Picture: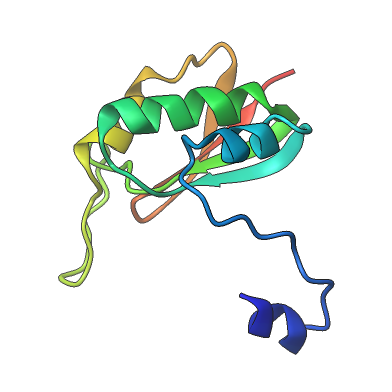
Length: 117
């Protein structure tokens, strides 16, 4: 990550090594309103649900959240080297409140949702 930032002459990001459910990770997530969040990690429904709740709560209006591995219920046909996703993230994608978020894009098994308002 840092090598890529160096390559493009970008200021180094603040990196946190933690599980998304750890107190210090939740503190960082809730420390501000984010313009973009990428949820990728544990694929178990309960963990993805907690990730979605923490992240979507701290997403700025108009902000985008990308949910990785969430394409099982879509018509995406993966190439031989990929998958449509996993049950946990795919279930969360189906449960997202469409009055608060709209799906704006799908790239492979990644689905992007924009916070309305």
